[in-house]
Amino acid sequence: MFLLKPLYPIHPHITLKSTIIKSPRLYFFDPCIAISALRINSYDLLSTTKMFISSKRTNIQDTGFFFEAQVIKHLRVYMNLLGARIFYYRDINRVEIDAIIELKNHYVAVEIKTGSLNGIADGIKRINKFREILTKEEREKYTTFCIVTASNWTYYDKQNDINVITLEQLFLDLKSIT
Image 1 (tube, one colour):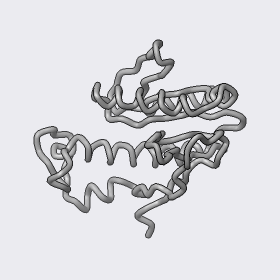
Image 2 (cartoon, rainbow, N blue to C red):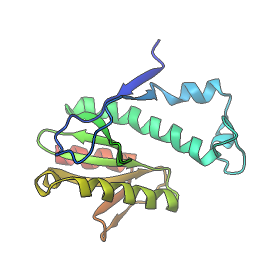
Image 3 (tube, rainbow, N blue to C red):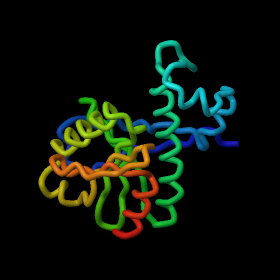
Image 4 (cartoon, rainbow, N blue to C red):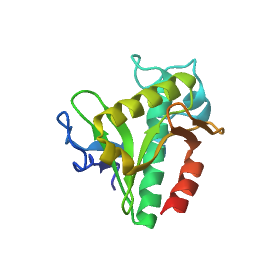
């Protein structure tokens, strides 16, 4: 039985200004297995007052970890159906993107956040840092920069050209641009 599945870094289609991290990220094949093994119920998972797993991390961070793993799981399944591939990007300067979807001739950069305003602001900063390392030609290959959230509202951040969307909306958008 596989509990963990690696997500590999994007192959260098980017003109690198710094050294890329090449080690794969490990995600639970199904994060529900970990949640069940830890005996976490839905109230504990969504509660912002109770801490679990580690006294050094708050519940909202753990919820984000499980949400990110769940999004990656669903992206893998859906991207496989579309004939697309999924990677991540991280370099030694701490520029990081949670998921980069490689479609036929373009890319989609995805940050994954639970939906708090601080999380979305952090996602915008991460995407903008990532844009800064891309050349103009590379930037043109990215059709979408987005933040996938657990919240049920979506909006377009016109100032930063970033879509804040649900996972379902991302799937609908990807289906229309493939």
